[in-house]
Length: 127
Length: 179
Image (cartoon, rainbow over all chains, first blue to last red; front, side, top):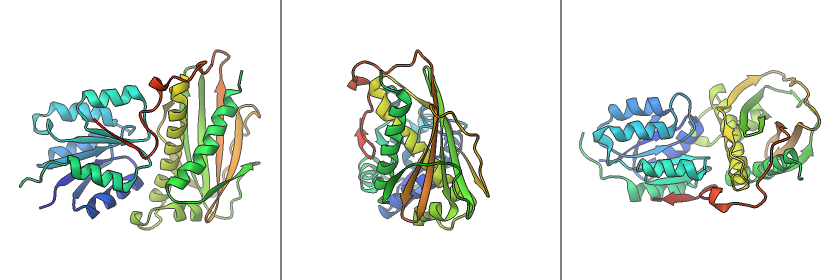
């Protein structure tokens, strides 16, 4: 059984690039195009092992998603890594306060993303 | 006092080349350009607005459909209109992200909007004032892409006198910070 990773980004290009890297590392990937979509997908996906999430997105941004995600007891321990063009210390501090595990600045290096995913992802669990 | 428009412009020109290099694409600045871009085929357009205290503006990227298609990662499949728009919109977003990150230590925190993209047969943007609008042309593997940068600055706009590393980006493009 593969670990499941939720990839949240409004850019199809970024989602596809992240998916390619993660699938090569034997992860299953679920895609969401903004924070609202991510909340819906996470609700329907038991046993998430990791979330990779953009910051600037329409409808609900990545940090507001993270705040809502953390309020759900099911997702308290799910590691979240932010993947974004942003690198502003105040935004990083907010993510850290919401118990994100990392921050990657786009454009990302696939090897770096794969190593982070392998290091941080929770072991897969049966649904 | 340095001209902030020219400083923003220089960062964007450098960043455009650096961004393509990150995608292993050759990109050479071919200098300022007089609009409009040639329209031998459909054009893909991506525009994003930005603002910070005492400044506001817009970045527009334009390129031919075939050029954007060549930039698309293979995993995106065929060159559907939505995918072409997505690629140029993300490049515009990353370009302004680079500008933002370079301005942070100088006390300027840009707020960046969401990109708007379109595929058009022809484009005629309203000419801008010489002091607040500029076009640049870049040569990439399969042709050209064009960048128009518009920005206005209030008299009160200023960079901080010294660089403040603590306000700067937490890392460079492509880097990862683990908590």
